[in-house]
Length: 264
Ligand code: A3P
Image (tube, rainbow, N blue to C red; front, top):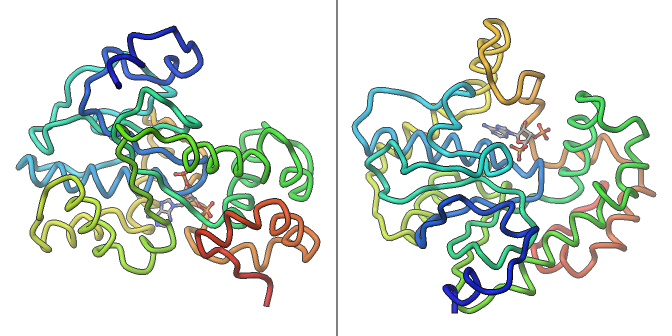
């Protein structure tokens, strides 16, 4: 089935976000923007570096060589790490029939909207208010619903998709990583997971970001990307009307993923 789809009628949009050449065991880390995929990438890269017995830590400078971003480059070589033995690729693609193995990272869309607003504003890509961003068809809650729904509804039987949540990573990072790697067929020593969690802690990543900015290292970020890294930020950033708007638009998905928390 997979071969038939890859070789079948060209689906240009989906192929634009497919590694070249594609490998049947490529694992895609997929998320709507601002769901925490950079953190997940740091965690996984820090695990893979240890398991590959390399004396190195993931940084904003080198992350791309361990977990490449399909939006920056499609032309991918084999991984330079010996572990886990397949490539891990970051993507924000909506449903893509060419991805065979997927970890889908979710975050409460109310916090996503806040994070996205500050991100877009800093880059000068959006000039409106936070309420306007939430109501924007391209970036707002409609876009989030489209993305999430596309992966929920369209996935084929040959596609292996596992959902993890930012909030669980915050609460129990070790448990989430244990689950991710057992799905991938590995039982990793706790000491490796704990070391990766420490190396990828918010403050460590923030220090690294400041270092990269100070020395003008060619980080793909280069602005204050490490903002707050908390859950429930929406409570101090959104109005009741904004929260209601999100609740109404995404009611079904918020129920499924247990994101019904509202303003206190
Ligand atoms: P905030 O803007 O709410 O702080 P992405 O990588 O998908 O663009 O997501 C960015 C969000 O993840 C930002 O959220 C960022 O601060 C948060 N983040 C990055 N590293 C983190 C870490 N180590 N722990 C918790 N959150 C982190």
